[in-house]
Length: 135
Image (tube, rainbow, N blue to C red; front, side, top):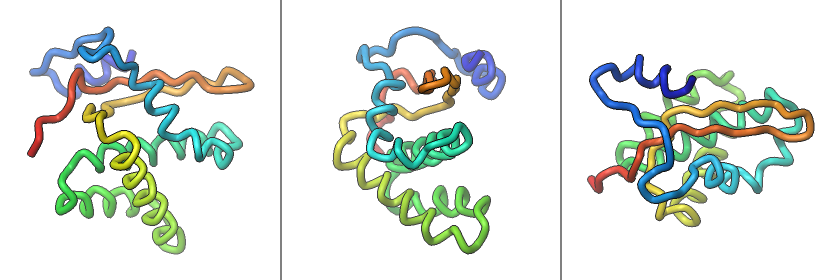
């Protein structure tokens, strides 16, 4: 289902499903990335918000620092003004975590799907097959 949605968004590109060239499952990497923050996601809505924020921060960290502000500002536009400073601080913290602990992973996250299993969530991630070229 995720693959078809991405294929519609990028009709001139081939979207391939299956294991990435490096054998790494980005769902597992992303779960590890958000692990320190899982306790703040105590509802399904909160978990979805955490995932959306984590994906934006992850992808933003893949761009050179001079290009990041625009990506962050775009996401913050959806927040009420009184939450923007805290949102920016959290995104910055996630970007720092990505650069510090997950720098080896250069794959962009294209989409994700969360399924509520009752006691936990199942995460499916669609990402680029390999890392972004160095800019």
